[in-house]
Every structure is written in C-alpha cells, then in structure tokens.
Image (cartoon, rainbow, N blue to C red; front, top):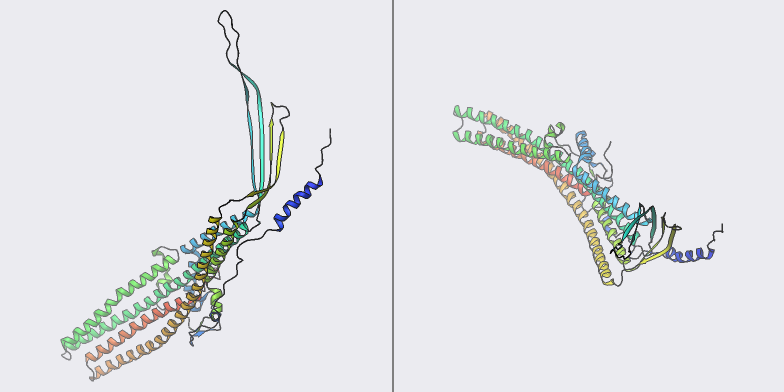
Length: 491
C-alpha cells in the first residue's frame, strides 16, 4: 500500500498568516458609549426643605413599611406577586433576554449538515431494428438494470470574523435594550406598590369619612328632634324646624357619595391585586382609619434619587442602545468576512471507484457594493435616534427632579393645612357644645345651635377631605422618589 502523502508544513503557515490579520486587526467601528453627565447641582439636596422631611436618611426600599400597617404590607406583597401589569412586564423582559441570547449566538460558528440515501433500479434505454421482406422492423427497448444504492453527505461550517464590530455592536445594543426593559419592569413595580398603597389609603379614608358622615347624620337627627319638640312647646318657630330638617337631609346626602368612593377604591385595589371586584380582602373592607407614616419622611438627596429612579436608568440604557446601533450601521460600509470549511462525500454501488470526498477551507468575503448612499443614510438615522435618546434622558432627569420638588411642596403644605384643620375641628366642636349649653340655659337660640352645628360638620368634612388629599400626596412623593423596585416580594 502506498504511503499517504503528508501535506507540507508551509501550507499551515500560509493559512495562519492569512487568518492572523483577521483575528488581530478586528475593531468595532462607531462611537464608544459613555454615560451622559447630569447637572452637578442635581446631585445635591432638594430645594424644598421642611422639618417633616429627613434629607439624611435614605428612602427605604420598602417605603410602605413606614406606615406600620400589617394589612398594607400584605397587600403590597400580594400586588407585587400577582399584578397583571407586572406579569406583562416580566414577559417583556424574558423576551428581551431571549433576543440578547440570539444576538450572542452570532459569535458562534454556524453549521449545516445534510445527507441522503437513494435506492432503486437503473433503467437502460436502446433502439434499432432489422429490415426484412416481411416488413419487420425494430423499435426502442428498455432493460431494468441492477439495484443500486447512492449515498451522499455534506457538512459545512462558517464563522464571521467580526473585523468591524457589527456583531459586537449588535450584542451591545441588545444588552442595553434588555437592561432598559428591565428598568421599565422595575418602574412598573414602583407604580404597582404606589397605587396599591394609594387605593388602600383611599379606602381607609373613605371609611373614616363614612364614620364622620354617620355621626353627622345622628347629630342632625337629634337636633331636628329637639327643635321639633321646642316648636311644639312654642319656644321656636317653624322656620327653625325647617333649617334643622335641611341640615339633617344634607348630612344624609353625603353618605351615598362617600360609600361610592369607598367602593371605587376597593375595586381599584382588587384589580391591582390581580383579583375580581368581589375578591377584595376583608381587612381592606373593614379599614376605617388611614395609617400615617408618622415621623419625618426619609427623602435622601438628589444623588440617591438619580441612582434609584428606574425611568432614568431606562432612558440611559436606551441611549446606550442607540449609540451601539450607530456602530451597527457603520459596519455596513465594510465587507463581511467569514471563515469556514465544507466537506462532501458521494458513493454509488454501481460505479466502481465512485467513492469521493472533497473539502474546502478559507475566508469568504461578502460586500454589498456600491450601496454606500443607503448605508450613510442609515448611519444618519442612527445618529439622529441617539440625539433624541440623549434629549429624552436629559428631560427625564429634569422631570424626576421636578416631580420630587412638587411632591415635597404638596406634602409640606398638606401637613401644615392638616394641623390648622385639626385645630379648626376641635374649636368648632367646642363651640357647638358651648352653644348647646347656652341654649339649655336660655341664652342662645336654636338658630345659634344650628349655625354652630353647621360649622362643626363643615370642619369635619374639611378634615376628611384634606386627610385624603395628603395621603395621596404622600404616595405621589414616594413614587417620585422611585422606591419600591429593589426588594423582591417575600416568598
């Protein structure tokens, strides 16, 4: 048997010399991303200051625990687990991560394998004939040959040499897209936690409002009965009875509206919890006193805010993705070079010596030419998208700072208002009691009692309304501060 020839070593050296420039000289075209700068003063203390705010203590991740209400804690935990918007956001994140995995797969070689096996009889065709006196002739004929088997196989492998960074920039863009969608998911968590807290506090506030309204109905009822008794005794006139009756009817009229507001808040809470309207937890239904954070609210400073807000992280990652896409578009100006090889095998039983094998190895160059106009247009489009993403990021920073300052201002004003309204309610109740005493002593008229009573009821309604608004303003502030996404729900 003859010896198998050994390929010369210098062919391997030539191949290495050919591949070295492709592997060593690779570089990513397009701009390298750097995080945008924020206004230096944005990282300092907030403009709005108040004794009710703690600018040193950072906002806790689970800020709703500041209310020290176990029912609220359980509701937020349930919402962060079952909320349908969060399920959508998690699915979007899973899809983005799958897209990133697909982009990373472009770094790996692509393979193609196929083969076949055929079996059958060979058919031979022929023709001819002999002339004769009898007019006999010949015609074509076909013979079935022997059974034959044909085997073939083909395998190929290709790997793109990412000389100009098309693949790496694509992966960079996909990674930034996935991070932006993750930040958007975190933003949904912030929203769900805040709106669940708001709905619960509204239901509790409306429950307290119902108690106040029922007290008002009972108070006006007793006043009406007393006035009617005085009218029968001749101490007051019919007009005083009508005024007392009007006050009683007005007090009753407030009940349906407050009850409707309470049901609306409970239905909103059920939706946030991923439940149907008939599945509101009983603990939320029975709440009749809204909890309060109590001590000074921990708000931190601007630097903590910029790190914490998910929408700022989303805008920054979108900017990173658009910057990477400039490189993807720029890479289209250059050729694509792939390294690969292929092998083919063929065998036929009917043909002696038919076994054959062939292979090839080397770089392949693909270059769309001369479509430079379209490529440059795509680069300009990517650059414009990047400019828009940068402007959006800058605007989002300003919006975050604005929302926090607005929230601080509203809460500070609401806290001051509540202190005055509580005092007004206390004084109105004391005045009503004193007027009743004077009436029983004969020094005040029924009209004076009704006026004092109307002042008391108005003061109570004002307190309930202001408390509801303050509770909502606090939630807006916590939402603007961006807390609630860092800690996953407890299992």
